[in-house]
Length: 429
Image (cartoon, rainbow, N blue to C red; front, side, top):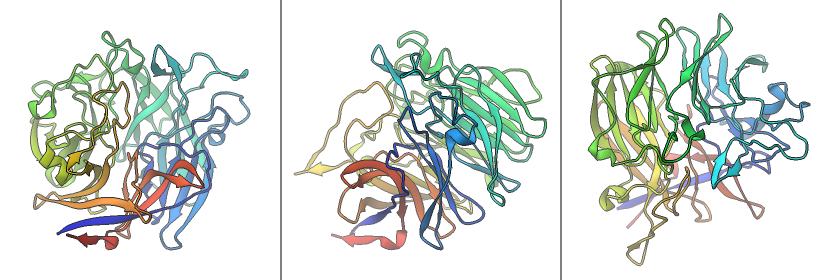
């Protein structure tokens, strides 16, 4: 007996809505907050909220405007590439650039602004007060860089970021209101030259709440740590991500996340982090105190496990998050499509983070205490079409899974809010 799930798509009102990575989170007030990104040189990304009790979306703000740059005639704040982190009644997040310039066949930070515009002014750390609706512009990243990756030490009030494309590690102290640029995390990051100093950058960091140390990975498979009481970035010795099960990668070339973990979070009951390697789909357990990494399970869909093939999204998927009680991992990942018994095959290689071919979207759950894996089946819209470019997830207080996915709206493909309710599960032979 097989099963499938039905996804409900919402049009929030933004006709230019483009692919969003990470930027959706369930807040303590029961609402889902998310950003719809923009590829426009004129209009930046937009922030929205969804209320499950009313089943309605609400526009909150324009990212460029809350950064104080609405009248600057600069390239707008087109994206947020990070989750929202809640602390003391506020949501903390960051902005990123949404447009690129093709330079020697690669998407690069624009060097030439169109129509008299000035270049991108840098990403911002921001906060949003859930009670008052007030935004605060906290800090701006260095050297015209966007903020690609972010995490928060809630206990100590620190924000950490990795910028794009060079890959600076930055640290913002909320109480002191100070921003520190610590250094580059991996060669020249995604501004580097392929085959030389190019390195794909880590998209997820994790804080050990016990001591405030933050950890990130590199495409070479090394793990680095930073602590605000110490100078610089420190390599964690005695452990790495160069694991045979993850595959073999050349970290100097684009087209994969290399040995980077794709997403990671802290699991308090065991005082360890659980992470996913995006390309292979292997779930692992990282104990920073030992230090040690253990493979737990291949968390891909059942059809992927049987085929033995990687998913079609070249970087793997970011829709990886624990349930509100922290015990059950929810993972939105791919599953191969079979036509007349043959697997639909995509491109062998592409030079950026994108889909190499069409595949189904599956919801996987993994209950950590009992080590129980379940594939809830492929997900379809009511008309039978597939959600695609899914790289975000939030689990609502209502138990539904929320994400941002592509769908057709009035004859145009956009990306917007999607709700996946496990009560919609249908069974078939």
